[in-house]
Image (tube, rainbow, N blue to C red; front, top):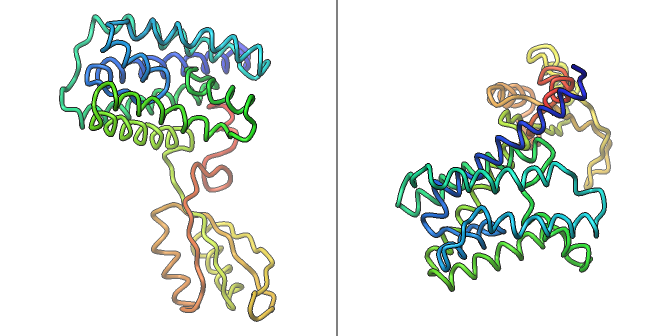
Length: 289
C-alpha cells in the first residue's frame, strides 16, 4: 500500500472518529440540556426543543445545500472531506440518539464536558483535513460576499446570533452556558491542532550573551540561535539569543542565566509542537498528517 493511500485512509479515519465524537457531545451533553453552542448544531438544538425536529436531519438539511453553494461560489477549496464530515456527523447523531441517554442533567457539567468532547472531535476532523461544515462554510461565504468581514469575524457573528437566539427561546442563563461550551471547545481544538507537548521559546538579551550561549550549548545540550540586534536607547549592537526548551528545563535555564548575568533581559513564550533536533522529528509530523 502506497504512502498516499495510507495517508488518505488515515485522514478519513480521523474525520470519521472526530465526527462521531462531535455527535456524542451533542447526544450526551448539549442537546438534552438545551445548550445551543453556536453554529448549525446550535440551530438544530433550538429546533429540536421547539418542534421536535431530529437534530441529525436538521444538521444534514442545512449543511448539504451550504456545501454545494460553497463549492459553486468558492470553488475547489471546499473538498470531499468536508462533505464526508457533514454526512458522518449527521448520521452519527441520528444513530446514537435512540441508543444513548444523557450523561448528566447538570447544565454546568454538560456545558464543560460537551465542550471538551466536541472540541476533541472537531480537532480530529481538522487534523484529518476536513470540517463538519456549518459555521465554517457560512463564515467563508460571508467573507466572500462581504470582504470587510474576516472569517474569524464571521464565525463570531454566527455563533453570537445563535447564542442570542438561544437566550430568547430558552433563557439567558442557558445562553451563558452555551458560551462556556464554545470557549472550552475552542481551547481544546487549539490543543489538538497545535499539540500537547508545549515547549518554551526563550529570547535572551545580555551583555554576556557569548558566555550564556556557551553554557547552554555545553551544559543543557540545546541549540542556540544568535540574532543580531541593537539597543534602542544605547544604539549598541548585541546578540539576541533564541533557545527552545521543554518545561522541565525552565528552572535550569533561569538559574544558568542568573548565575552569569542577573541583569539579563529574558522573554519566554509558549511554543506548541516544536519540530526539529532535540524535539519531535519533522518526518514524524509529516507521517502523522
